[in-house]
Length: 461
Image (cartoon, rainbow, N blue to C red; front, side):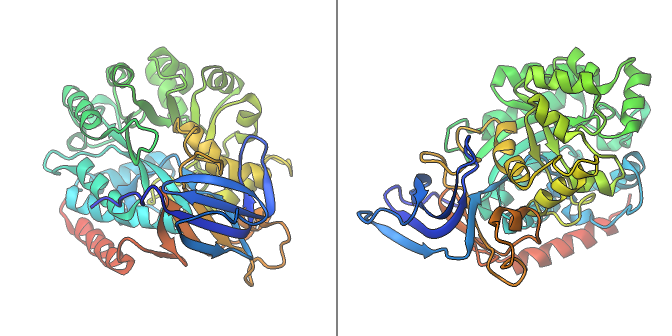
């Protein structure tokens, strides 16, 4: 059952906290307050909250804590929670070939368990909104998208479900096994049905749909073109993997006679309604085209490192004006499953370009909040702490042994160990308290995921 929004007239008051609003001016308060009314932020400011407030159901003395916007995850594969730790030392193409046969045996029941594991890890690391890219739909797998959505709604995570797809198998020159792909017409029909059944375009939306053919090496050109046409007719966004590895670039040049960005441009896949995962191997022309068209990027630093894909040119993208957010990626290539730790990983990995200011602590926080909100097209609703925005907030404890000697609380978050999460509000609801999920039994989720992983591993290929 979906978590319901709180009563519209009740207030939660957070006081005496350090606050990083991540608004347009990067406003911060050393000792400020946030007032939540129903599912929205009523006010934020310096000093104590106004004394006249009524119907306050909870007043929090947040001394020694940092309040930030809830983190926004722009790319994930929830189903991979039950295939972690496999193909540990492979590059992307070899990793995919090793895991596709296992993933092709998945079904809706196993996806439900995996989605709850992935969503739980995200929530416990400060993430309040996530986009998940599911593209494996075996013929006998049942209602996989519906199972995933149901699983996430039970935990209270704000969700963009990406109806993915693959129609280019080994027989067509792709990587997936033949039985792991769908027919093009069936994909388009299922994609339209998903939008009609689930997509909520309202400002308060807890569930949106985007269309997401998997990658240039696993889908046909016709699928890319017709998915773009369908998405724009239905008013939803588009997502795929792009420029992830050198092997992908070589694949595109061999098959299409051009690099990934030029190929995507040729099929109508650049624009403000599009974002792509990884974008590691981008030249100056590619970055300029993304900036000119407003095409977004989901930067996945840990996964890029795990698969030896390379270091994305995030500082250059930001300088050019490309919308960039953070992504965990699937937990078969980022076993931690946490978004909070990606702030630090993004900061450190991008400094390997050789510049100590390539990414600052505050830029890392912006990538994980407003950057992600912009990539998902929800920057007017989430991503910063401003009056009128949705009450998606993270309260981090930064006065403990691991952080108390760091005077700058944002540096404590982005450079130090991930701080304990004292409270996470999604849509005004407390979904994490003192590091524990409140809406479900997380020990039960852990047990269900362990069973699902064993069951999937035992299924015959």
